[in-house]
Amino acid sequence: MMGGQAAGGYHTLTPVDFWQTLMVAAMDMILSAAAAVAIVMAVVVVGATRTALWPTTLISAWTWALGAVVAWGLTAIGDGMLGPSEAAAPVFELLWFAVALFSLCPAVAVLGARRPGAGAWNGFVLMPLLAVLGWPILAVLAGGFPLRPLELEAPQLIGLGIVLLMGASNYVGTKYGTSAGLYALAVCLLLAPLSGASSDWLSPQVTRALGSCVLGLSAIVAGLQRDRPFPSSEPFDRLWEDYRNTFGVVWAHRLRDRFNTLSRQKKWSVELTAVGFRWDDAVSAEQRRETTGKIEQSLRWMLRRFVNPEWIDQRLTTTSRS
View: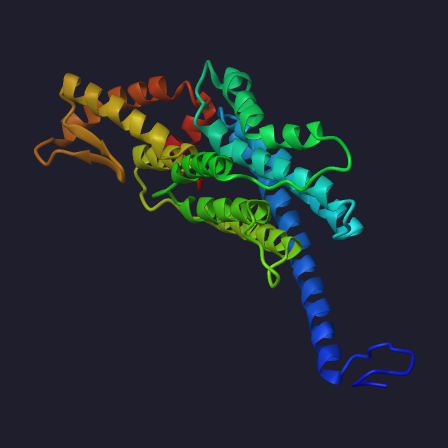
């Protein structure tokens, strides 16, 4: 019997309530399926970049990225299997927070990706960073069982936001800028339920599922941008663009400053800009040919702390895509 109250005091669903409940359940299933597909896509895209990054110092950042997306997927599976139960909720809050912390590490690892200190960056920067930002986890565990809910305070959220912004902004102005922005948004959606920002119409489960979808979208955009051809056919411009897109604007700015200082000292009449090498109009073809070999030698010397020689060779001798 629908509508009103049945004998025995039991309430029954009205047709409107029934269809609303059915639609909500269907939307939850669709969102959960989309989140699962998105996480798989993220794992596939990250895994596929290993070959391209192996000749570079970014292999450490790749390891952090793969670990983060795998942890993201495993936590989503466990959370989906147990559901929003009262007993499991505090445990998965800690796990999701740990996933968010690990997700900060790849971009921070890029900022330390220079030989010979690339390996030490993990121990002296990333691990202490995780220890400081992960202090709320230890605070909850120290309270004993049953675990109390994890809710991040304003100073903790500010610290997380600064680290997230620092890592994502490194790719602003590169072809991976959109992907980096989406990745930062995905992490923010993971943290939102722990900040008290969730509401009745946007539950923690829905917020995290949306975050997983954005993560997958970020990976897809990055994969599409990776296959985008070089806009310039000049070998030095190809080398510069790929280095800038791969390592971000922080390292690119430092390399550009070093090269331009050397160029002025050697009077090469060439300047390295954000979009490539620019020669003075007064430079003759013969002067340019004589200078080209010196430029290549200098670039190889400057890039030796970031990439292997074969990485440079590929970009100077082919029209490959980054």
